[in-house]
Length: 309
Image (cartoon, rainbow, N blue to C red; front, side, top):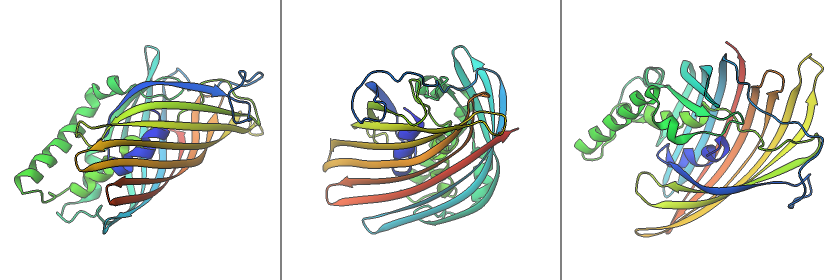
């Protein structure tokens, strides 16, 4: 599952979803909005295969409401990312370096006590495997040793909540933000095919997502449009600017009724073509989850910039 799809689901499912791809198609359309011949004269955007270290400076601002509940989360952070080749993929080991602004309200507020920032810095670390266009290898990532501690932390909190009759334990607020870390600390995915300046490629993806460990699978259909706005070489390096538009929809029958999802993502990516590294990204996501008579709406704004570590 791509970063953009994960971004569309993570805030609502709070990191509990896993994805099993059922296949997809990639349709370059040269900006015409339909299936067409492959783009000619385009450039292939790929992450570099060499070892590298980056510092990511980012922020997230999220609002969610529905069924008499609300939640607000605003966070500024920095993280260290270390890239190393792993066969035909890249392994990225990450950790939070600093937590700046942190404002949690409503369902994200940690009423159980505890130092949320300290928990985030202590547990905010892990690793993931991607191919050179940023596509996540979920199965291999799940088995990485760097992710074991965070999984055990979530398991412990769940056991404590169950023992206390469902009352959130200390650190539960931090856990909800940690559940978003896999979407925040990630590489923006790049177009599968070459793309020319001023042109658009359209990619379609079908997937199934498990809802919150319930065993219920939601089929989702996603369409992503990449437009290469320009390649700026005025600074001595070629920096590609990509505009991204995405829409996702899905529905599934659960005990008690039908659950459905509708979401959109809009944003931009700056990418260093020569170094094969991200420069920055900015995304705004809007999602509605409906279940029976209840519905939840979430808006999330995420942005990050990268510098060599």
